[in-house]
Length: 186
Ligand SMILES: Cc1cc2nc3c(=O)[nH]c(=O)nc-3n(C[C@H](O)[C@H](O)[C@H](O)COP(=O)(O)O)c2cc1C
Image 1 (cartoon, rainbow, N blue to C red):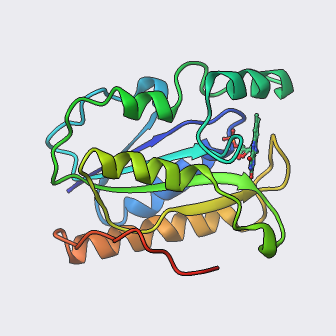
Image 2 (image 1 turned 90 degrees about the vertical axis):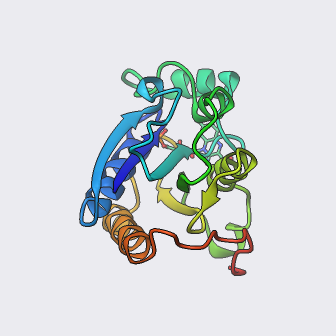
Image 3 (image 1 turned 60 degrees about the horizontal axis):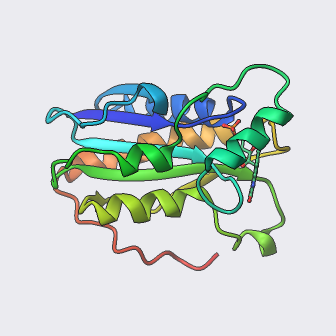
């Protein structure tokens, strides 16, 4: 069983979450982690689980203009300097329909009553579903304290645990039924 974690990140927060998820996943499978600019345009047959994550920009996935806005706020160089997850998924060559997928995002920390604001993860999920892929777990969000970070305390441990739990669910049911898309109300 092989996992591939693909992430986009401007300031490094989503990159850290991706690495923590990969650590968790590695309890149950071999895992590769790729920045989206370095991610393959065709997913190899050996990959059985694909996990994709991105920062929330303007309530969804980044676009060229929001990445430009991020660059203006950055104090150092950006982690993802080229395409984003939106463009990568848009160009993916026909993936194997048996590929299982999951998504995550980072977003600003906010009071619970505001957490209904859309984030990037469900948008990733929708795009992967359109390719006919099997979503095996609801998308998860991890919070940053401010636009450029840092991550809220405890988020990396939660990401590791999310990865561990995904690995154990997936390995106990390599054929795990797809998640329908209905999410519990928050
Ligand atoms: C242009 C721009 C738009 C953003 N829009 C949102 C938003 O709509 N909702 C939100 O929760 N966070 C928003 N953020 C904050 C990002 O989610 C945050 O910068 C990101 O999670 C940091 O992850 P990164 O270091 O991997 O880029 C925005 C950030 C930028 C730069």
